[in-house]
Amino acid sequence: MSRLRELLRVEGRTLVFILAGLVVLEIGFRAVGDRLSGDVAHMDRIDDIVADLDRADAFKVLFVGNSLIAEGLDPVALEGSLSTSLAQPVSVGLVRPDGSSPLEWYYLLDRWVFSEGRTPDLLVIPFGPGHLFDRDARQATFRLAAHHVGNGALSELLSRDLTDFEARSQFFLARVSRAYALRERIQRRALDVLIPDYRELAPLILRRGARTADTGSVTDADAPNPAVGRTRTLQMVQRLTARAGTAGVPVLFLAMPEAELWAVDSAVATMIGDGWPGLLDFRGSLALPPERFPDGEHMDSEGRERFTERLSAELLPTVLRLSEASGG
Image 1 (cartoon, one colour):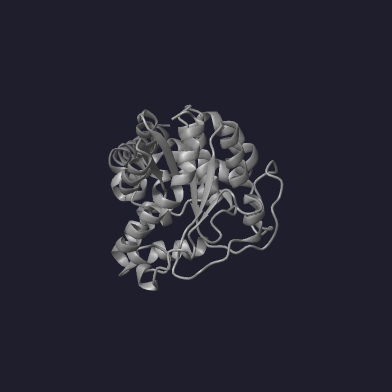
Image 2 (cartoon, one colour; image 1 turned 120 degrees about the vertical axis):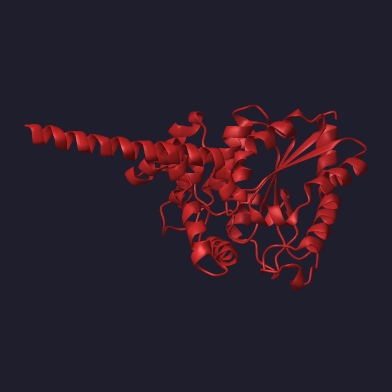
């Protein structure tokens, strides 16, 4: 009996020690987790970005995309140019989690914009080849849990997008544990130490893996999120535009330039509509030389400057029309 008590005492101390270590680890990651990645720091600031835009006494333009627009747009220069041309204030917000897709855009917009009533006057969705197609929701489980999904959207997420037990379990673990949610960042930091040039190569590999081609047609936007391996669909971006429409927010798609001219997928063209009235097409209009795209996709500083200047001119008629319609 005494040996059993001693064994339980030792195991109890061990368990307490492990739990204390986990608590310390969790506190540490909650305090400094954003230092692991500029992308994590950006996602932590989405609420502030949207709030600042909402408070602006100006025509409000919100861009939601990924690294293509993060590297390609100078929001301050765009604000100044549009404000000067319109002779009225224009405020630009930029939300651009690296490697994100319409699934993440939908839920972060639901949480930080639509559910809070902080709607912009214009929502711009930049995209590259394959970016608007659905991806397996499990690929974004940790970011959905830690950053994008509000409590009010949990039912929708679990019934339509995260439908298997493993994905749901990972989601709720990441929901309560910052350390668990950021474990991929920890792994990348370790690989960065062990593998030369890993920091430069990893984002390019991940972005290349996310690029997809059109292999099928659009399906009903009310259907569940498609499983891996099925025909590529546009359900999430359709749900996003429907949500924006319900909130009275106009949506404008923006085809981004890359080093090589790329084709708009037929399914995307069908979704946008005949004549592409909701599309600004910059795929080849800038005539930027390949050297303006060091990795083939993202613009350098000179490309960014030229793109922003041209975007201001192309965006002006839409902003003017919407501003006049709202009495601005």
